[in-house]
Image 1 (spheres, rainbow, N blue to C red):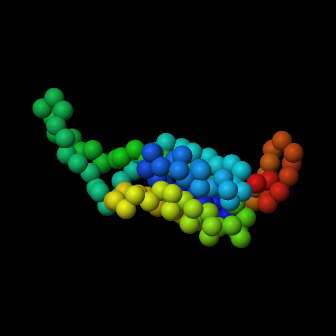
Image 2 (tube, helix red, strand yellow; image 1 turned 30 degrees about the vertical axis):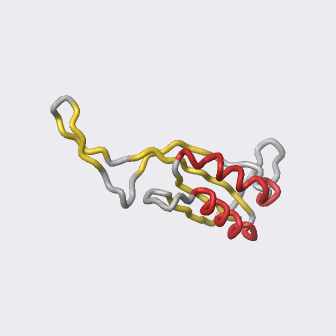
Image 3 (cartoon, one colour; image 1 turned 90 degrees about the vertical axis):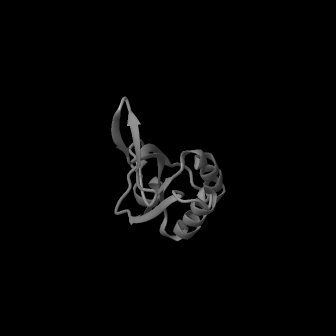
Length: 112
């Protein structure tokens, strides 16, 4: 099992969800986050004081999938989230040691 984590632009969330549904992804977790990458930060002035704006709003998607689905899921996310501009995001794939569905007690792939 793998945990696929993607950081994307917020307005691409629906497109990514729609791309994952036909693959059989039954659930995902979405978190609103802030971050920066190559676009770095900007300096702005507010009430005469200069301050650094370093973080842009992003969305983090986490989805647990069987190992054989990882490539399709990563491709679906990257295709749906791509705008071709800086800040499109990143996709990370992590090993998932164990999963447990609390309601039924199912474990590992059955719990996904």
